[in-house]
Length: 172
Image (cartoon, rainbow, N blue to C red; front, side, top):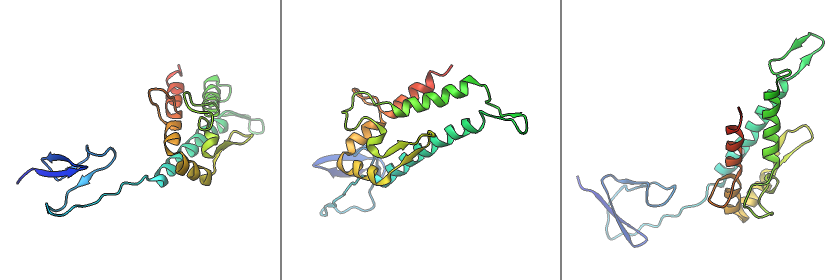
């Protein structure tokens, strides 16, 4: 058994296994055969479908939480039944905080890509979010880095993942 030796962009690498996941961020190279005379081209593309699926999951999760709180924060006068969150200020506060976070602007981003509406996420009068997948796809194709920044935290930006984290961490 020998170490695997290979070159990527004129840089030589050696690994104890035939798998390297630390060369190109987010990519694992599985070295299947050796032929020093052969150059293999690798094309890495963005998986915008997975990103769209994850944004859809975020919208669905938000709607699920808000719906759950709404369903359990009521009193049925016909059955004289109070649901578990009825009169609970914490449950209302969580729903209000979520609405506030998702309707705010992400910090440090340009006005053209600092709100969820810029990627096709809107909220109706009842507080239910919806996703316009074609608008999201257009945003991913025209401003991929901006969309990523909208959801992630970086040195100069505060995306929605960080805003949600901050909001959840502040609950007593």
